[in-house]
Length: 457
Image 1: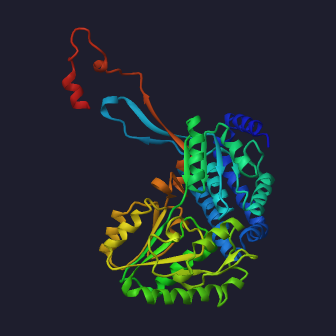
Image 2 (image 1 turned 90 degrees about the vertical axis):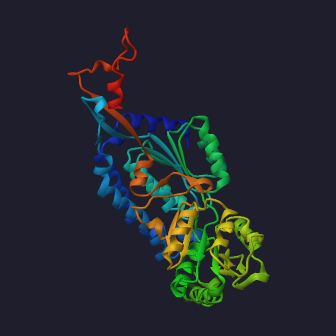
Image 3 (image 1 turned 45 degrees about the vertical axis):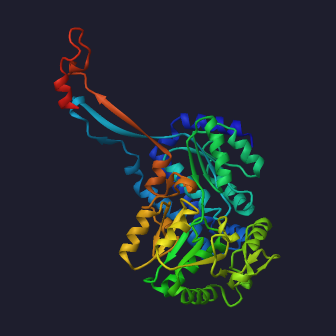
């Protein structure tokens, strides 16, 4: 792709004002929705080829979330895009004040491989709804889905509006050398730092959706049956390759054994007695990540699973008990189907452990104690999360999704997504029929009118 030519054409298209039309935005979202529905089987096939994700999970975690986001934007677009009047202070009388939403312009979307369709198209929905153009760079690791995304986008949008480029690191580097009005990146911290460094050259605003070791806390008041089911689902869906997956489990010692027993039960209920043979057990994205994950498993601490099948790139859902913060599995974000269990005696112990990996992207607390809920939420800084569930907080358009500190910056979904790609200009429209002169300098007395100004301000 001739990046400079595409960027120049998108700049020209944006300058024409075409994308600012609400009718254009709405029709574009409808085209995208209809094409996704039309290509449902092809989308599922591409994702299965990359990750072995089953049809139900594919719709639930990829297509369904995107279609829900489009539905939200179509329903709320007029309200989101309208000029909003705000109060004007008496000191500025006579005048009216407005907040004027304006799209940034040309947006670069760089997406990851773990949810290759959803994490590419969902930010695009916000980009289109807010009136921008976009160049999309999906991950080279999920090559089948990336090719499908290119086919889908090119079938409905001209490249001067939305363009897709595929390839590896050299393409990423070339794109980051270009000038953008906004960069949206989802991926690892290491690449996120590079994106931010490159963006700083042109003072380009960025959103970084990163990750981290998201803790899951289970206290003695938790409903063990429900807790084990929901944690086992959230941890092992997509083979644990989820940025908001529960990374490690902090469990009260008095209920730990019962919790592990029920997790084993639900793993086999979900995936069978031999999970590794289940065709819908997701595979690890490539050999490099497979070997990394196998290296994190300590056989001496495994109480379930602990083995893989390299030819299939699949790892059995694994539970490790009595893990310490010194273990290899606690030194990095796992991003795989390994569940470390760390027992605790009292709730105060958990804060020191969580502080070893500050600002996680998500936090999950299973507790029926309202005081514990209040304490944990107030003491730990994290992007978002759930009480008595996992992962599902990102499924609602009325909750912004994003990280904080080391886990990222900026958030999207629903209104937050529209706001992210919109600059809100502050406009004060002053009337001409009256001009209060008290604000102007007075050559005879610099303090004249000061008492009035103090009352007004």
